[in-house]
Length: 377
Image (cartoon, rainbow, N blue to C red; front, top):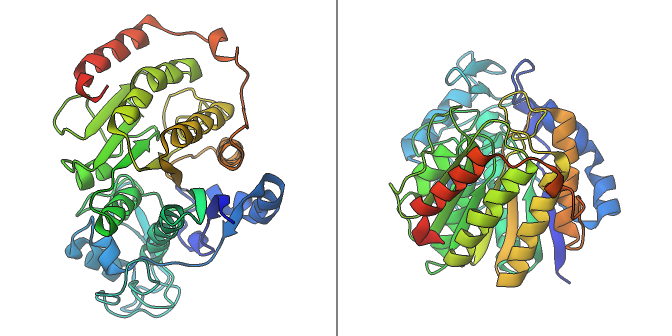
C-alpha cells in the first residue's frame, strides 16, 4: 500500500553544530525527538536511517575538486580531529568524531549508496551533508516508484547556496539540484520543477541547473539580502527569480503564488515537484524581514499538494533549507506535515487572506514580473 507522506531525518545531524551560529543543531533536536509521536498522530512514515550519497551522486552537480576539498577539510587526523573551523565567514565545519580515509572513497559506487563519505563510519560536517543528499535521493526514489506520494527531508545542513565548486551560506552540497539531476540521469525525458521559498535566493541551485531545459527553477526571496543574487531577468530560459519587498505578508505572497508561480508551473507541466523549504521568510525569523506565518506555510503546502494531484505531477518532495526562529520553525513544519499527510487539511480560513493588506508596490511589482516572464505563463 502506497504511503501518503514519508519523512526522512538522519540521526547524526547534531554532530554538525556551532552553538552561537544560526544554523545550529538545536534547530531540529526538539522536533526530531517528537517525530515518532508526530508520525502516529499525523500519519506518516518515518525514515530515520543514515543514507550517505556517493561521489557519483554528488558529482552530478559538483566538481570533484569541491568534493575532495570538503572531505579533506572535515576529516580527522593531522591534529584536526574533533575541531571546528570556518570555510568562509558564514559557513562552519566540524571535523571527524572518528577516523577517516581518503577523499576518493565511494568513487564509482552505485547511486544513493552509503559509501562515498570520508569513511564508512566517520561522522563530520561533510558526511552529514551527504546524509542530507542521501535522504532526499531516498525519498525521490520512493516517490517515482510509487512507494509514497510525497516526502519531506528534515535535514541539515541546508543546500541551496552551494555552487558547483564552492560551499557557502551554511551549505555544502546543493541538495535539490543534485536530486533533479539524479532523476534526469535515470530518466532523461523527465521534467523537474524546483520551487524555492526560502527568504534567501537559491544561488547554488540556480548555478547547478541553469540552462537545463528539463528543470524549471522558481525562487521567491527577499531583495537586497544575502547572497545578493536572483534578479528578475531572462538570463536563463529555465530560471524565474521573484525578489520580494520587505514585510511581504501572507496575502501578498499568495498574490504572487496565484499570478506567477502556479501559472508558470502549469505551463511547464512538471513530472515531479521539488521544494526548497526554507522557513526563514517567517515574520519572527531573525535573518530577514518578510512576514509570512506558520499557518500560511501549511496553506501553501496544501495548494502545492492540490497542484500535484490535479496535474498528475509526482510529489511534492520538500527538503529543509532555512528557518532560524526555532518555535516558528517547529510550528511551520507541523503545519506542512499535516498538509502533506492530509490533502483536506486547511490551516487558514477562506476569509483570512482578504483581511490583510495588499500594497500597491507589491501589485505593481507582480505585474512587472508577469511581463518579464510572460513566456512562462
